[in-house]
Length: 312
Image 1 (cartoon, helix red, strand yellow):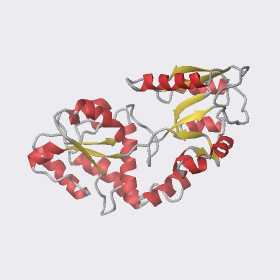
Image 2 (cartoon, helix red, strand yellow; image 1 turned 180 degrees about the horizontal axis):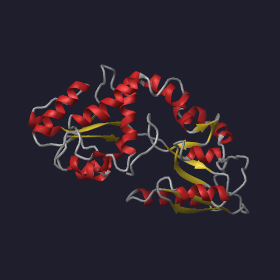
Image 3 (cartoon, one colour; image 1 turned 90 degrees about the vertical axis):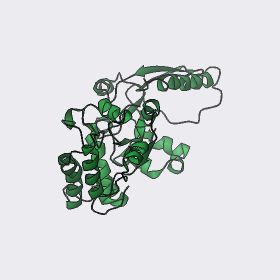
Image 4 (cartoon, rainbow, N blue to C red; image 1 turned 45 degrees about the vertical axis):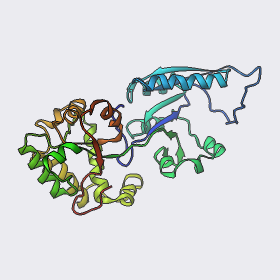
């Protein structure tokens, strides 16, 4: 799957409804079969489903929808991840009607500020989304008290490890910060890259920051900081957690040299080929692991505890 770039708490991509191509309409329940003289409607849908399996599946879903609603034609457009041209198109009134897009403040947040996205609150009320969809998912897709999208996927962050390598070397999977540094020393002495971590183009650090912050703050405090702006990013726990990964682990040789220049796919290959016993990333990598990790059994655990705090 494509690398994920969004929230520290969860990876959530939204299908957003935009108001640039057509005026907002009062939602009505779609009939099973449209009237014989139903108005012809063209929906322009933009998404990132380009990989094998995803693109054909999206096309299949769109075709099945059109078969059930003959008056609706779906034009399927492919866009790149968080394509910057989408912003221009929406502002100029030439963008898609439905878009699969990132919810980060630099992406959908800017579109909301520009008032080119259509709030979905009336639809949410009509279709009971307040009871059918988790509140945290609706909150993640809301801004200024209004709902702008629906979550499409949820992902988890953690650490994958090579079970066979750990058993062969007689290592214990690290569960604490101190055990992590000790493991790095042992793995490095054996000629391994302790963690298959690369930070190019840079979104990887964003997720890793999320792992350590969640671990030191806990779910409730992290949620208040991320979504309610209660707390400070400079508070001691966060500083300690950030220093542990980005300074202490770096100095301990846990990563390959020039880690900020190592591409995402290259770091993954170090894990797939057995050069790195551990890989810190998210569950979006599972499909790639299934395809590439043929000679060992991958396991997943939470990132180690920092300062004795819980592992999230």
